[in-house]
Every structure is written in C-alpha cells, then in structure tokens.
Length: 306
Image 1 (cartoon, rainbow, N blue to C red):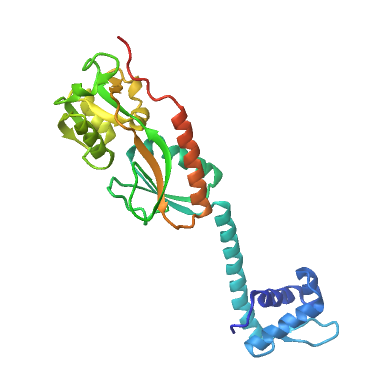
Image 2 (tube, helix red, strand yellow):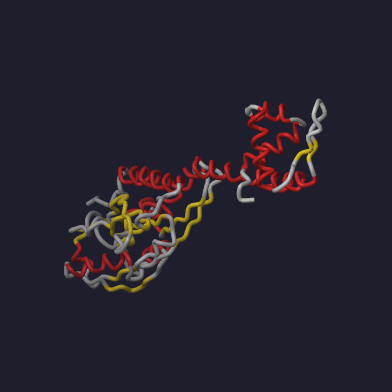
C-alpha cells in the first residue's frame, strides 16, 4: 500500500466519474496509455483488479476492491486538496501569530499593527499576550515587543527610542522644563521597579536624585489618576503620555527634564534562528512602518510657557 500515490487515486476517481479510460484521460490531460499505466500501478499496489473491463463500447465497471479503494481514496484526495489550500493560505499570510506585548505598546503601537493585519488577512489568527516580566519569555512566542535588550539566543530589531517626560498635577512646577534635581525627595507615583522603571530609578540615582515614591501600580491610567489626585508626579514614557492624551488634560502638565533621562528603547524580539511564517514576517514589516511613523510625529508638547 505504500506504493499508492494520490495521482493513482485521482485517476481512479476520474474513470468512475467519466465512465471510461478515454474520457478520464481527456479530463486529466493525460494520454489513454498513461491512464492505463496508472491504473495498472494502482492494481499492483492494492493486490487486485479495481476495474472489470468488458471491452467494446460498454463502460468499465469498478470491482468491489476498487469500490473500497475509491471510498478511502476520495477522502484522501479531499484531505490533500484541503492541505494544499491551507498551505496556499499560509503562504499568503493567513495563519496564526503569537505576539507578546506590554501596556504602552498595547495602547499606542499594537492596535495599528493588528488593524493592518486584519485588513490584509481577514482570516488570520492573532494571539496577544500582555505580560510585564523581566526577563521576558521570548521562546514561547513568535514575536515579542519589549523595552530593552535580552540576553541569550534572541534577535533584536529596534523600533524606536521613547523619551521620558515628567507628568505633574498642573501648578506643581512652573511651566517649562524642570531641573532633575527638583525631584529629589519629591513625592512620585511609579510603576513597580522592574523593566524600564528600574532603569529610570537607577538613572535618577546616578544623578544624585532620589524621589520619594508614595505609590506603585502596574496600571498607566492608575498612575495618572493618582497624579491628578495630587499624590505626586510621575515620570512616564512618551508612548504612554501620547496614548493617554495627557496633553489635552487640563488638570495635568507635561514637562521635559533637564538633563533628560536616556530614552527607553522599544524592540521587537524573537528567538534566534527561528523561521518566520509569512504572517509573522508581515507583522514585523508593519511594526517597523508603524513605529517609524510614530517616531516621526512630534512628542506631546511639554509645557514651555513662562
């Protein structure tokens, strides 16, 4: 049975459907001798005749063995067609992609990427996983957005630099840039000290600035709510400030820091040596385009009025 080929089964089905070797040959684009050779090969593989050949103008008749082979053969041919169609859809970009993300990317970058993918490939399966871990679990995903480099067998594609801004309740500081030293012992609302928050606090400490953290939370909106409530100020990445539309909030004020903190770097990561599916490859292309447009746009204008 290992010698049975799909072309043999397709020829068997065509003969049954057309009623003769000649008409089956015309349908398949073969010569009649080629059809006869394929049926002979099939009969050898299954160990018996699959057709009775009465000769003359009378149609060929399928044998009981041939009927068994045909029934299973049609199933195999249908599965082969389904496989071919699935491969074609996969190559065209309709597949599944697992993407890791984090808050500000989920709000500012990923919706634009997902919308483009959905428009181009309506049948694609996009799985999103938001997790704040340090280090992240790259190997379990096709792609991962992350704010920093990761050790190990990981490929890094830098998307953009994301500058830090100081967000305060309006009136906390005069309009315009704020000297970093003014944050020493100032009340601050902050994220937990992992990932980029840990780097921010280290950079402040290196400049001799140690704010007094009064509240920590993982939620960007919660951070801003506490700033509005007067609990303290917050140092937030530009993507976060943008997506939250802080610039249009009359209760808040956005300042640049002097000197500024090193911007956080937004990367797209994947396991080294991984072969990307067409959908994952297209996701990378779109992410680069979206990040480029965001980088070209002006950051939320910090307050500069005197």
